[in-house]
Amino acid sequence: MTVHHTDVAIVGAGPVGLFAVFELGMLGLRCHVMDALSAAGGQCVALYPEKPIYDIPGYPVVEAQQLIDRLAEQAAPFEPVYHLGHPVTHLEAIGEDRWRLTNAGGAVVEAGAVMIAAGVGAFGPHRPPLAGLAEYEGKSIFYLVERREAFRGKRVVIAGGGDSAIDWAISLAEIAASVAVVHRRDKFRAAPESERRLWALAAEGRIEMVIPYQLAGLQGSGGQLEAVIVQTLKGENRTVPADILLPFFGLSMDLGPIAEWGLTLENKHIAVDQATCMTSRPGLFAIGDIATYPGKLKLILTGFSEAAMAAHAIHPRLRPDEVLRFEHSTTKGVPV
Ligand code: FAD
Image (cartoon, rainbow, N blue to C red; front, side):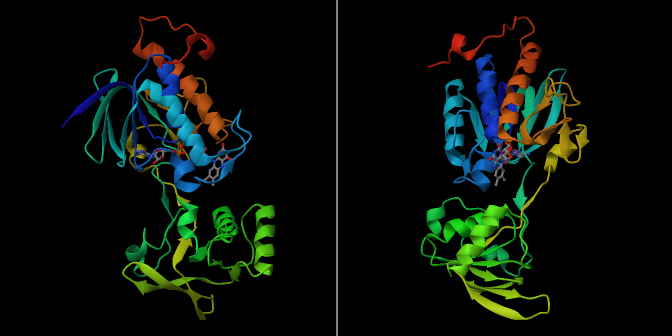
């Protein structure tokens, strides 16, 4: 078993974890970054890679995947080591000032401080309770759209009544052979403008509204769907031909192992001191969506600021003999 030694272990390679690499790097601190997902990017990549984001300072508009690519590029000069594809399951204190983290793949990282940037925790989709579901998952049933082009020319059934369901119905109507939206009532929980566009496309015959129905069964073989069975509350069945099913019933938020790490929690979030982002355990810091304090806004830009504040709070703990002089990046530059 190889044990990696570093200054700071970051749990979570979402946008905030990635920017933390930069902020720590600017203070001369090295990082290892651990994430349960097989690619960096957190919610941006897992949930909405092709959606435009409008509230990142300096970018009037940037697609979520593009933002992640730029953050990874900004972090790269500081040579972070990534451990992807396995959740961090154990965290233990070793001695006074060091921590040992172990992931489900067996990687062990020992660090002087930990930044938990784990977003909504180990998130997973709410799965519809359908017989044989697992056979189709990843082949013709998907809980997120990684690449819109993969659905070109396909018969797509989308289930759900929130923003993701509506946004993808509108988007895929441009390239899919057909799009059907299955929802149990004619009210949606989505931005009014999106809902207006959805009904307009339905009126033009470009989206079929399968309402009021819910998913009841799957037809197909070898992981390839042929149709989705839907049912009304009264038990009337209908068969909707389908190559692809996209159930968008939201995310189940689960802090997972983090809940066992002895931190003060508030409503499934980690309570931190707003000035430093330190948790109730000295040496453990939390930033981004998972951190909470009075007035917290769950935005990417808030997480960026928390990464900077936590990095400045960590430096004196790890380098007590160095004087930390505040310097702008314009003065300091970055490694080339
Ligand atoms: P996340 O992006 O959630 O990343 C956390 C990472 O931690 C994940 O990759 C996860 O796998 C990992 N992780 C969790 N637990 C473990 C564990 N035990 N071990 C290892 N890894 C773990 N924000 C904006 O500012 N502007 C917007 O326009 C905007 N639009 C959005 C649209 C949608 C559809 C959604 C869903 C969100 C949007 N957000 C937006 C919110 C934004 O995406 C989040 O605020 C942001 O992703 C939080 O970043 P993070 O790095 O804190 O967490």
